[in-house]
Image (cartoon, rainbow, N blue to C red):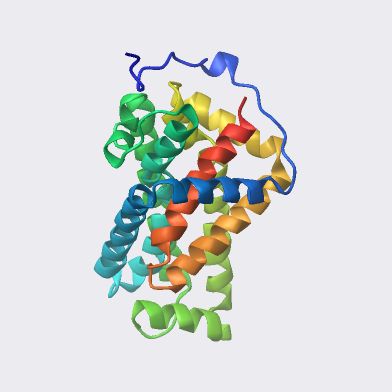
Length: 259
């Protein structure tokens, strides 16, 4: 019997996988394929959705009374989200390969490429930590109002013209970091789940895929932002469905982009 986890190693950085160009409407197709995967085994997919939503709730609950950490925790959660979706990528991979696909089966995804996934996990933690520091510095330097709770501070930054400079600097810095994380993760994490490859090979492939398909992947990033925002707007309950949907769709995006 063939071991579904054992796969031959892929090329290293010296011989990157070939990339495909996709149409602007490709993200809509990925959403359709992701939804089909979610419906195939709803319990398995929603297991990850619940786990991610609970993790987000714990993070936000811990930082709810810490003004300097609350907003950064929300963004930091989004920065590390790609690695949290690894089990969903594995489910989609198994569906395509006609392999057994239970929650337990999906949890062994790390066995195929443990060093690559652990390395990306550490990279995600580093990105979240960097954003935490940047966020604290921006608030400490530019926020001149009286001490407020996290939500009140966020509202104050939006409605009070005195804090517009801080708001736009915060938004700009967060946007740049989020764009960088998207570029290095949109293909790399599904690729690390799907095959054995070096972290640098996966990250380079991801950045090259974005460079080769700037408009479709900008549209894909916009869709991810909107759906994730809706998940947060429902007190994280919507993330139970949104995150598995996006996770499955992201794997199909990778398969579409990387030959």
